[in-house]
Amino acid sequence: CCGRYLQGSQPAPTAEALMRSRYSAYVLGDTAYLLRTWAGDKRPPRLDLANDRSEWLGLQIVRTTGGGEAETTGEVEFIARFRLTGRQGQLHERSRFRREAGTWVYVDGDAQTSYAAAPVTTPARAQPSVGRNDPCPCGSGQKWKRCCGR
Image (tube, rainbow, N blue to C red; front, side, top):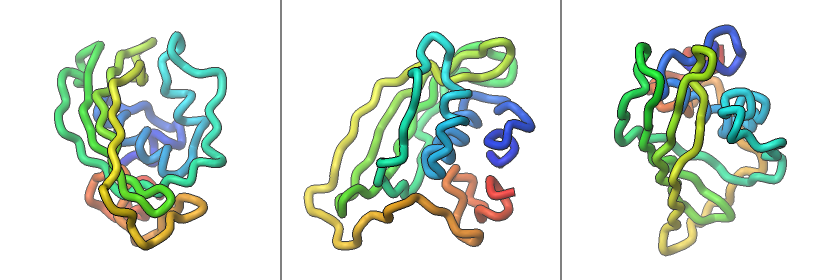
């Protein structure tokens, strides 16, 4: 699934595939991939996830508009669930993508973050991690070892 994109051996063929791979990169703290797949005119000079204590819990694609293999722009609406300092929350975003030199890149997005009313009792992990037999964070439904963990 996303492993080949994260490793740089193949670009994501669609805006949705790029969205899923960028979510996986956030789970793994792969800032190099996130910066590499950001539109040049929108890319921040640096991205530091070292102190991000978010535990990403899942990705749901709500809707995709455009962003196909033969298109030049696309939008992906998604909900990413997370836990931070014992509270569950979700990031709901409409992300915009475009092709630059034939490769999909993230441009920007409109995001809203919300939290559950009551704190969750289990604390967030200090470092995001994915075990070999855990579900892949990209949302493919496969195990990590058979998907992005290749």
